[in-house]
Length: 80
Image (cartoon, rainbow, N blue to C red; front, side, top):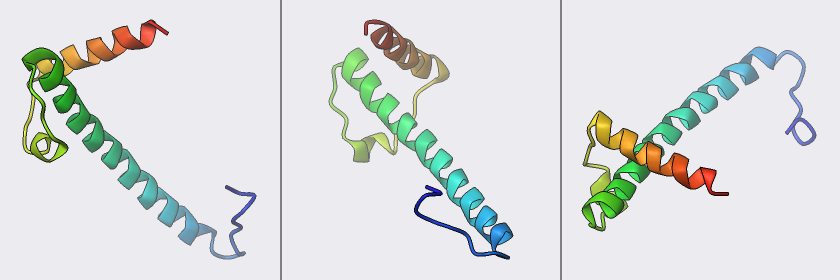
């Protein structure tokens, strides 16, 4: 990104604050999206139900259920 955007002298602190705020938001968004996808995957593979993203946003899994989805993902990634 440094090839396209340059910070004017004197604005380094302001730029750092904006980048920090944006990075924190992106990390929160990634956790949120991972939770929703785990719920969709768990319902599809373990319960045989199709859950929409909209419905998945209001559901939660137990710790053990999340770990089962994680295990399934780890097994798939080892097959490559």
